[in-house]
Length: 161
Image 1 (cartoon, rainbow, N blue to C red):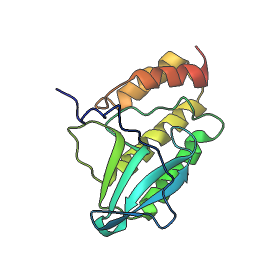
Image 2: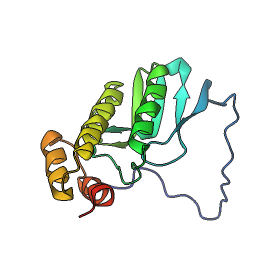
Image 3: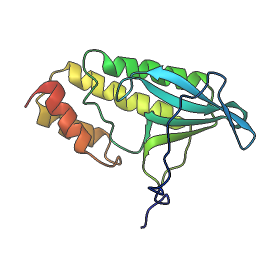
């Protein structure tokens, strides 16, 4: 499989600019940035295209991938749940996850699946298992998700070895 995007021209400088509060137009549709707070990292946002019912969810919603929880201590996982509520309030008809199994559809049910996965993690973390026990249990509960590495290093960071 080759690259998904063309290589940028190094001779062309591209400067990032903040998205205005009113959003911007893309192919005739307003695109708005929505701050959702902490997810798998701080200061996360999603892009919302209201006319299409589309949310480009970045780090907020995962689709078929084990979630990065390394930054989830000290209430971070609970904050992520609140971020999912914010995305759900947008009432999307399509959700493009930033971390996804490319074979899976961009279905809004991924919001609930991300939430269920986080709740499993929170319940298991609250039981204070050994890191290896946590890792094995998450893989047992979510065997079809790809990329188990973040489960292991998240477990070690949050539970110790």
